[in-house]
Image (cartoon, rainbow, N blue to C red; front, side, top):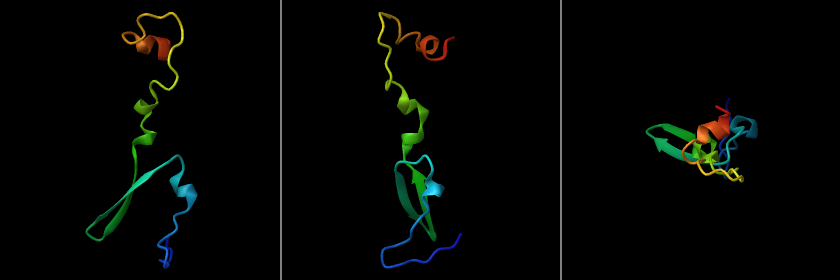
Length: 69
């Protein structure tokens, strides 16, 4: 894909950023890179839906409660 650089910069189509909430922009030598910031990392979703039951061992046996193992 080619695109023109305007006075405002470059427009990146949204479909190329599907599932990305935030990017880091880096310039290294002659390359400009967009790197997704860690929001897509599934480990960051742990704790968003905590167990709300009388479970005393959720922190020890979390795999059993998350994945039914």
